Amino acid sequence: MKESFLCKNPGCNSQELSFRLYDGQQFCNDHYKEIFSAELISLFEGWVETTEPPDRLKYLIGRFYSENETAFIGKPSLTKAIVQKRSYGWKKGKDCAVFSVVRNPVDKRLGYPYCFEDHQTWSFCISGLTFTFLSEERK
Image 1 (cartoon, one colour):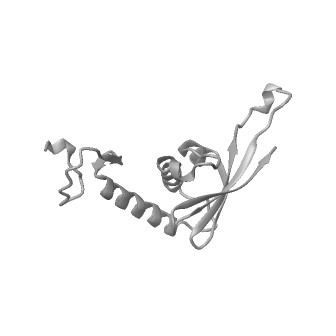
Image 2 (cartoon, rainbow, N blue to C red):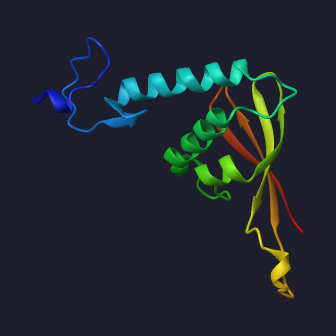
């Protein structure tokens, strides 16, 4: 097998031709999940409860949702961009975080008569790597 198609995890002998990129390096699916979850858990545990989560943690949470979207069928959806750029009000518990996002932001200065934004509240639990849609309010 070509060297360029091998998993970058030392000692991996995976013969998978498909691989996943993580920080510019390719990994087989098993090692990708292992490395991704390890960083996600580490950043979550290191996040100080009284502060906004680090941008890297928001990025990983959004990426996790985007990559596992089919597991959350039937619920409103999120994207990496929404979690990274339009999330606010983060509250960290023991193993879950609750946060809100703004959907459909409208620049009210444009004078549209029917301007509204949807504010959704979500929880993300690190223990089961699950998302729960909690509520939505139109403003």
